[in-house]
Structures are given as C-alpha cells and as structure tokens.
Length: 337
Image 1 (cartoon, rainbow, N blue to C red):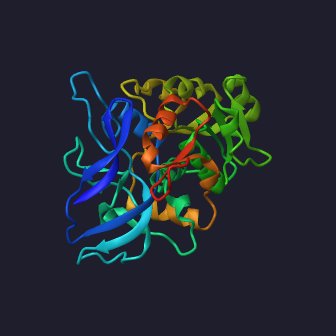
Image 2: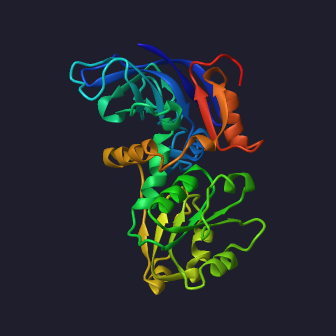
C-alpha cells in the first residue's frame, strides 16, 4: 500500500517522499492525516543521528538510523477500520501516535499518510475539540507526565527547567495541580507564553542568576525540580535551593551524559522520578484536560508548513534560524507557508 511521508534520508535532511506501508490488518485503523506536530527535541536528535531508539543515544559503533520516518503524533479522519476495531469508525476525527511503515530503518513512524495504525494507538477526539490543538498530544502527555508523576501539595514551589513545549506543558500541569511555578528558560518570547499568577515567576537564565532568583522566590526552599532540557549541571546547581525531601523529575534527554550523583542527592534526601513514553491511561487523562481547557496548546504554535515543504520545516527546527517553538505540518494545504 502506498503512502507519503516525511523521510529522514540522511543526517540533517528530511524529504517528502512516497512510503510503502503494510496493508491494514483486522486491528488496524487507516487514517487520512490532516496535521502532524513535530517534536523538536526528540525528532531533532533522531534526524541528526544522535539516537538509535527511544531514550538510547547512538554510539559510534551503532549504525546510522537512516532512512526513517520521524515523529509520533498526528490527527486526521478515519478512512477505514479492520474487522476487529471497536473504538473508532469511518469518518471519526482521531489522534494517532506511531504508524507502520515498510523498508525503513524503523518499522514505524509518525509523519505518514494514509497512516496504518493499530487501534491501541488511536484516540477518538471529543466532539467540538479543534483537531490541531490535539496534534501534539504525545508531547503534551510528556508534560502532563512530568507534572503528575510525583506527590504534590497545594502551594508547593516547583522549578521547571526549560521553556520549550515540554517545559510549558509541565508548568501548566503543575499550575493545574495547585503548585507555585518558576520557569527557567533562555528565550524571552517563550517565557512570555506561560501564563503566570501572582506567585509564579519566569526567569531568563541568560540575563539573571537562576540560583539567586530561585532563592529570592523561595527563601524557605523549593519542593520540586523538573528538568525538561537534559541539563545535569543546572539540575545540580539548584540543590542548595531545595528543602529536604525535594522531588527531582528528569524529563530531558542527556545523551551519554545522564549521570546523577546519588550520594549528593542523599544529602538532601531527594527522590528521583524519570518518566518516559506514553500509556493509554496518561493519554486519556491528558486528552481530558485538553478538552476541558485545563491544558492549552495552540498558542505555542509558531509555524505551519504544508507537508510538501517538510524539508524547510525541519531545517527551521534544527537550525533555529529564527524564533521557533511549535511547528505544524499541514497535509491538506497548498504550497504557501
């Protein structure tokens, strides 16, 4: 069965090409994709050849993972279903994660249409929900996961390292749970995207000393630190700002530099949480919070590209030649950006 996809053909190069996909089986859903959302960090590292799978960094002895179809999140309309599919039907508006592909380094990918997807990786969208707002649902769930994997009391002070999409959605989740949030980032335009309440803060670490800023914000100490960018140095620099029994949440990618000193953590009696991936339960909960307005996504979209210009989209994500955050691929648009 022929489809089309965004194909990483070599390091730093993604093209819009024909893709062979398996014929659908009895538990598969075939989806006409309308929009897919690029995961800048994860997909960027795969396209650069830095990962070999999941959270596993590629070593020099590993093969280069090309060609492959990057991505893991999209929305569209159901074209058809296998005989054993019960959760969706033809014509439904749905979200889907990875879909099956043939002839690639990996047998699955995200940016492909028509998308042959197992029903366990398909979610019907609630009536009235703007589909584009759900096109980044897996990444949204990463933020939800980082913000919910640890115990939290109302009024606890939490520091979020990172002003990217995961940092934004982690901060939103923590706010929803009643925490007071301080976001550390490097980009004023991104920091301004987080709605803050009187006791929340946004700190640009390029202009201000982050440790001093945290100490001034929480003189009695913080109760949680969430790292969404993969910076052990920044994480450990915040230890002196923490109360005893502070929770650390690691949601970034560290490559081969993810070594944390447990003995130092023990001095503070810290607990480490390391969430990864997605589950049906977390996806359901995230979709519910998106549908009721507790989590917001569309204000983080900075660029939209027709799928035919996927090379330009990834070039922007990889080069950061201009301010960029959420990048949407439109599968039904013309050639205009």
